[in-house]
Image (cartoon, rainbow, N blue to C red; front, side, top):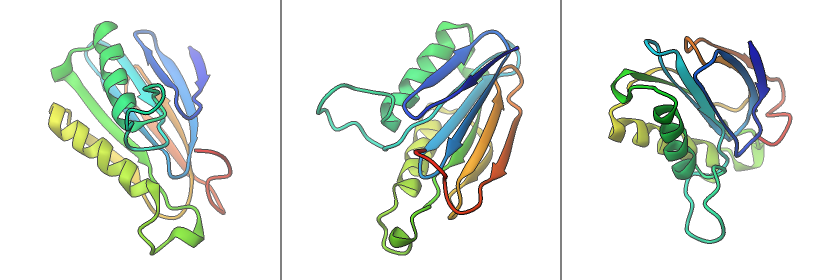
Length: 157
């Protein structure tokens, strides 16, 4: 089985079984898979919306969600067979807690709205809070393991 470390702004989509690991703070990772075809993938985005300045990178949630869905369908996933798991969106910087300034909840909201609008059910989530997470996702069957990190995100996600 192939293994990947997913950096912020990246997407993995595969019709072959893969294990993908990433570290999340305020960033969000959305895991999508079709259990019948075994096609699955994951994104990792930093900011909710691309505003049209610069390149439309998957560092932005609206771009990352569209690109992940398109890549999965291109690899043989059935839209009606897709299921989602949602992770991340923490407020790991104490200075922003309670001020409404954290990107985490905004990233989570964007992902939830996209999935609702596209009719993809969210079957599990581990979101928000004040600690980062280490996530490992299996593309073929949608299984995921999450370990909470002590003292924040410990990185850039």
